[in-house]
Length: 203
Image (cartoon, rainbow, N blue to C red; front, side, top):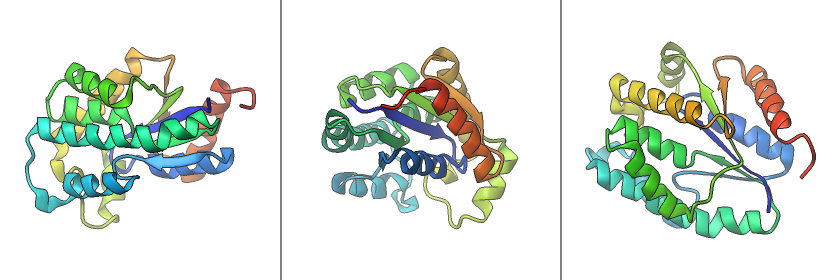
């Protein structure tokens, strides 16, 4: 089995950039959620398009789980079984933080749903990038029109951040927390050190 590393974080945390950098460094399969399958791309449009409007929290959680189930079955597990390392931008932690905490649906409920969707597949390491609200806001201000989740409001994103912190605190063996407010290079050095500490030997 290959190594499975997930990058998590709120909006504009820099996780996507750092996930791609690690995938390039390892020569790993890079993937992301929601949307990195043909089916997932259609679900992503529904989930993130502002025109979708309000979704019932259960509907939102189920759409995320549907994307993840197909993603794990068709992309992540086949790569891992071939011995490929996989680096994923968002995974179960995102659903627990965004739908469980952010939407108030319940962390345990979302965790059970995600466990069913993934056949219980857990990452070897989760890298959580945290940035202060002011840093995230300044990055989003130059990023163009917000998607439906980005535009969910400060209170929602505060709950998401609390959810991520709770997840990391509850599983310190699997999660590592990194300050994402520095430059891309500075954050990459911290990520590299954390990953190397967890995987000191070549796969």
